[in-house]
Image 1 (cartoon, helix red, strand yellow):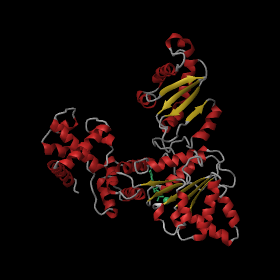
Image 2 (tube, rainbow, N blue to C red):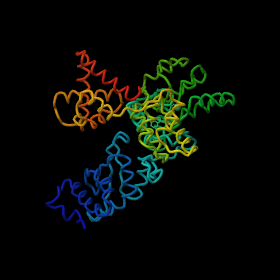
Image 3 (cartoon, rainbow, N blue to C red):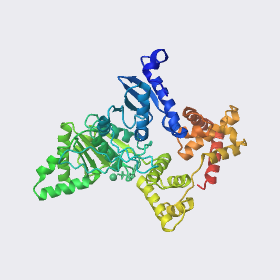
Image 4 (cartoon, protein in one colour):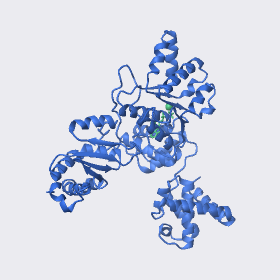
Length: 492
Ligand code: ADP
Ligand code: MG
């Protein structure tokens, strides 16, 4: 059995920071009690940070990780720590993935504090959707103050909002606002993007998170259509005063799809005053629009100029990798097993928006179950034919490598090898460049496929190829010939 830290500390451990020693002692014990796979998965990535005031701080890679440890290993860790240190100590988690919970440390000391701090810091229910799902549903909300109905759908969370280049900026801004409504310079926060790209999801996730993080916060989500209809009702029933003071009492007001305000002058006027009142009081306003604000017609100039007070962040169409990640998440959360190649097939072909992506997934499932067929690429092709005119197969990185090597007449594996022979380096650089041009793979993925090189090597290779293409006509022809071969091979 591991020794209490107070006995072993002298001499062996750094008196000032025994965290390292405590944790490694703890790991030895835990290793004997759980299977190797679980140990590797859940304990090896954990880092001890500090031990003081009877509290051990450990760093975990992500929010999800923390929840898993809490749910499955809390008792084991506590008992082990107790054995090692000889008394009960607090366990403090620090989440490394600070993109989700900026600088947030979750404190656990006593049983009752657990509930409290969970309620304060984590807007998630710690029950997984099902045994295998890796997604947690954020259905925890702190109770809104009496008389406020936030009108938020708890399904929309940051946890299940896939981050990609296309939405990274808007997502980060939304997170910052959720963590500190009214306290950032992003006021108003205006999210704009085309249909089905995730505006509603994002602004509702913001609302849900704010509600989970801040006690008694008055949050209200409303579509501009509902706002308009309610306003007209209020006029008819002579309750405009009530209507206005309700919205003007919010700490966080989210108005979705404000393009529908176009041409509705009275409603806009009311909203304009609501906006001003809230802004003056330092309350947070979040808006979404389906096009860049300056292209909005029929919207009050005064209102549009207000947007410049805050931040306008756009959501673009998702790239291939993001589309794949979204499809994976959707299929996992619905607990359906879809082969990777089918996911990629759909992601390559459905490029317009995420709602359509989801639509294809649903049609595919429906077809599979109605016709009692397996979910495979052929079935997906049938489904997609209805939606997409020109169905493509994804170009794989391997296929590109094969064609490049064939062109230069070099063995396939050399393009991934360490060799620095000029002709190989040349082929490898062209290969990386074409993968980047033709597949939407991330720099990291490309590097991995070319013998585990890092992303800066990939950037360098692509730049070299681009430079040479500018300077050298023959080189340019070579690259376009190879490119053409790849396109023909994948039926483009
Ligand atoms: P918009 O309001 O821009 O028209 P929505 O927010 O309604 O789009 O998004 C359409 C669908 O796509 C929703 O089901 C939403 O959950 C999903 N979705 C959008 N963006 C993402 C994302 N980044 N990750 C996961 N799902 C997403
Ligand atoms: Mg929407």
